[in-house]
Amino acid sequence: MATTQRFQTILLFGAPGAGKGTQGKILGQIPGFFHLSCGEVFRTLDTSSKLGKTFMEYSSRGELVPDDVTVAMWHQNMNAQTILSLYKPQVDLLVLDGIPRNPAQAVMMKKYVKVLKIVHLVCRDKEKMIERLRKRALKENRADDAKEEVIRKRWSVYEKETFPVLDCYDKAIISEVDAIGSPARVLQNILEHVVPVQEAHFRKPDDPKR
Image 1 (cartoon, one colour):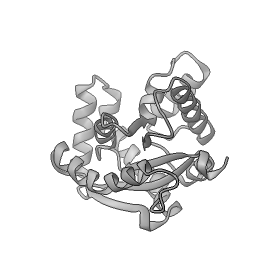
Image 2 (image 1 turned 180 degrees about the vertical axis):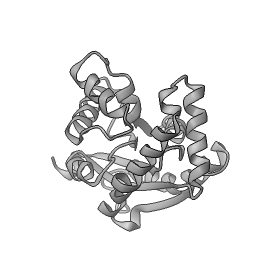
Image 3 (image 1 turned 90 degrees about the vertical axis):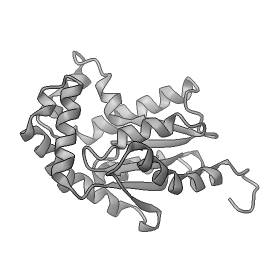
Image 4 (image 1 turned 90 degrees about the horizontal axis):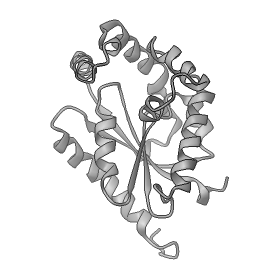
């Protein structure tokens, strides 16, 4: 797939509990941004289907879903969003969170996306993030996800398998944002990094500044 045909993308990156989904949803409400959470894609799966059963098998243990299943499901969803014109590649910047989750996925997705910016939501207080995850799971009536052993397993998987994703991209496009603070404050800091990217995306192809 040619570079011009790849989805122009911003990645929201960070540990479990960093607020990727929350910030992604907010950004997705702003014209010119289209948010897709890999987690939400999987949560809408029919759990009685083969793909749904595969997801539940791994998710219930706090482990990553196999790369081929993850990328296939994501790409299938993106095609549907594009066909339905919910996502307009020529107008919208794609905002992803939850994918890629390891270096292998990052390599597999290079033919589909051109990553223009990575917003790394940094949380230096691991215990605070774990408590945030526990409270969120209880609020959403997901008792299994509220178990401390499951949450710590997710963190362990992130540190060993997901964090190295950052090494797959040019450090010049990675911007760190403190994940601790009110959603509005975190959003303000994120916008400082992504608004220039959106403005460049809106310029006409023949604009010499593009």
